[in-house]
Image 1 (cartoon, rainbow, N blue to C red):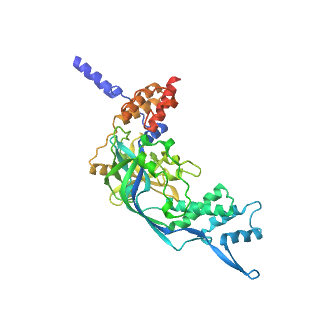
Image 2: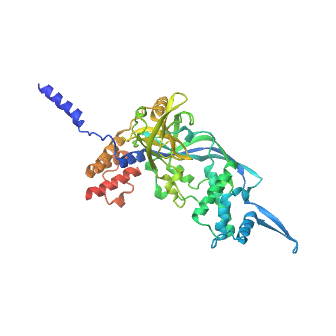
Image 3: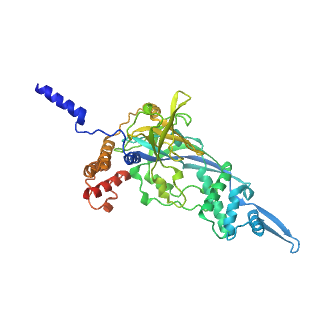
Length: 462
């Protein structure tokens, strides 16, 4: 009877209390899901041998006129002439300076006023960064999931090149008129010129390597700003912070990969690491229309004019709902979702209400913001199996989840104790945090653990 009593007590413990554990809510707090996702989302840089082709330079179109009285030939830009003519006809609004009007005219029809040089350039550059994307840690030993197209060969979008050249063209115009237009007009002109340039600039690449920027290696305060581009030559578009990227990232190997979207656009990467905070895999076969989704990544579209370069290193969350499960050729499914993902989000995690990984961002339509897609985690599991990997979240991820449950249930003291324990796991040597919040900026190498550690310490003192 005594043994039976002990068994009943044990059974009660397992069923009701989980032997000291807790029963998680059916749906986690939005802030907790954000913290779970951000701590495991990484930024990915692909390197390769790039060949660029396009016009060597861009100039303003000119017209030549002959003065029969002075016998002098004069040359003016067509844009100059247009501004002068419109001003004489009273078409330029009162109080508007020439530069503002010139930019507005240029924006409407760049082809009327700009021309590429006849000379075409072809540049070959070895082992240069050509693609930025996102990924998610699924095992503390450094196993990462992302998209195949983030680490692929072939023709690549030349958006960054085109924008750099467009900015130089606009700067040339600013120098000519001496006065700068309004910020909004300038930005509109840059995009108009970039759209005009886009068909003329091509980039192809041969993939060589991939590097990963982990949350614990994101020293935002130390990253240099991008130097202003001062020439429209295609060879000069690359960012000046490339060396810093190398210093603050880890090289990864591609263990397995699928085919670029609309194929099974998955790649499995492996870095040398330990005790990383990973995301637990969910079951995408249980996902249905109407379910909430939370997508993470580093979208270029989130970085606007006037923001510092370090803004590109901040993980962004987009939330929405599953629109439908779409059948694909090859007998697999794709997740349609309303969450607005963009360039740079590719390969980032898609989490459900329980904070578990159910997919990877893969594609979206720029002209239809709510038509976006994710590769189901069940598809990604095929490539994990091919790579011989059975991912497990690990102790740090388990403690991180428990700490967040404590934190958002207002048990800040328990949260703080767990966060210190996580910190010891991550760093391998640090003990409990001492000193003021400002003195512990280097305490945790994972910036998101650090943020919660400081918040919990401050709250526990109140």
